[in-house]
Amino acid sequence: MKLILLGPPGAGKGTQCKRIVDRYGMNHLSSGDILRAERSADTNLGRKAQSYMDSGALVPDDLIIEMMVGAMKKAGGGYVLDGFPRTVAQAEALDAALEKAGEQIDGIVNLVIDDQIIIGRMTGRRSCPKCGAVYHIENLKPKVDNICDKDGEPLVQRKDDKPEVVANRLKTYHEQTAAVVGYYTKTDKEIMTIDAAQSPEAVTASVFAKLDALSDQGR
Ligand code: ADP
Ligand code: AMP
Image (cartoon, protein in one colour):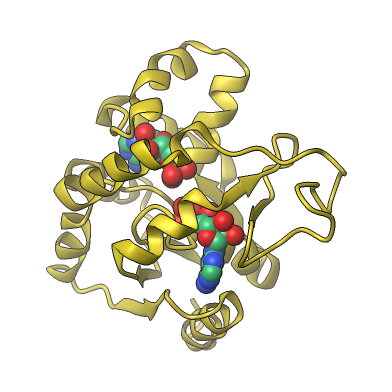
């Protein structure tokens, strides 16, 4: 299956993608995770992306499109796109790349949630700098406070999850990314809309119900 997971930052895309890949056995292609890995490795791309990411702005489309189309080719087979496309130009470039490869997206999941809930999710998010596992200080706690369950690393708060940057990221979402949902509404693709304000388990159950139906149709 080839999927797109849409939704504002902090909606729970990464959390749900990890569960989707475990169940359906596909690659998780998160543009944010790939950019953070590029930054950690101090690559050209990572250096170019840094100031945009730190301020809550979008990294320029040309850099992202090249990076994600490359990641899709490398992954081969099934994948779930997380955090991409984030502009209509990216969605158009994705369509063009898929058409060129003779492939298509099987399903689009849209996580819907209010800004007020998102703010609490982003400011309470803690991540493992080593394996990328994501927790929340209240909603999805690690077994030991501030320590990754998987590898025992101390958890960190992302720089762009500080309240002042969170406000900018939400503004960026409404100004530039929300239109991507409208873009797909105009295509013949069904958008699977999910209430992302539910508990993590309830969101997962809603997502799996939709994806099980898709996979039963042989996709
Ligand atoms: P995104 O990838 O969309 O930015 P994440 O998956 O990183 O979002 O989730 C943002 C934060 O909210 C994380 O701290 C995560 O643990 C927490 N979270 C995710 N889903 C839920 C949920 N359904 N209810 C409460 N908290 C959640
Ligand atoms: P995320 O981990 O998805 O919240 O992304 C973190 C940051 O990476 C965003 O705030 C952007 O600066 C950048 N980013 C991630 N994906 C994209 C994208 N598709 N287009 C532009 N910038 C992106």
